[in-house]
Length: 266
Image 1 (cartoon, one colour):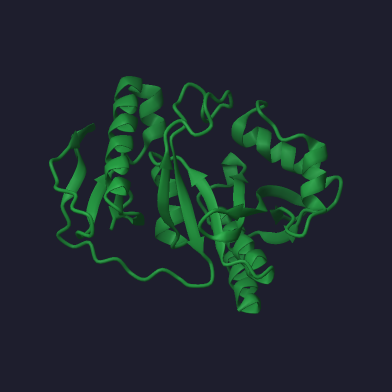
Image 2 (cartoon, rainbow, N blue to C red; image 1 turned 180 degrees about the horizontal axis):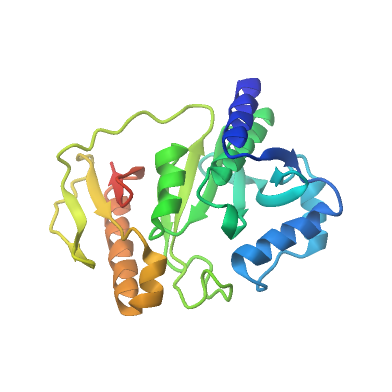
């Protein structure tokens, strides 16, 4: 399975026109910091000595290269989870802005999957902002992870250019890298959170524990809303948080993300 996992990762890398390499050298830390600054700005950077330690660990960061230029990386560590035991916690996935939207992140996550399987680990977990549709699509729709936990303001106030001024709500993804998730039939499922024009529109849905799938919609471009209509962006964040909390309280997890804007909870 490990050999197949690496083949899949390198195939995805070729499709994205990059090469995957482990980031184990001292100078790789400087390159990671360069990509980090391009992604989040010069705030809350990981110290270079810590990056050196990650690079010398049993599961070092992996990078996506165009020639000799690092354009993206994925970074995580082994951790003990109360439910899953030994896991990989994936803390960072980044690509420089002018190289996004072509599959670099997907290839990097597949390299992380292969590393986990190589170490005998079946589960990778990470957090992501539930209102950012493109991340939800990568995590749930493309990789096939689920999201079974939710935290409001998980990191508290952050000062980087992506999260500054935002409440850091986070879904927690759970990716079973050894057993792919099956398809989810959500045809005709009720909509718990819909959209009316640009605004969130909560609906009344009886969330019976053990019941069928329900849908939660999010804006397609929340980051654009933050810039152009900040009050509306905040309203969406609040509505999405309330809908997700209701779903998880009813025993449901986010099992898919479809049509570019819709979570499927079941």
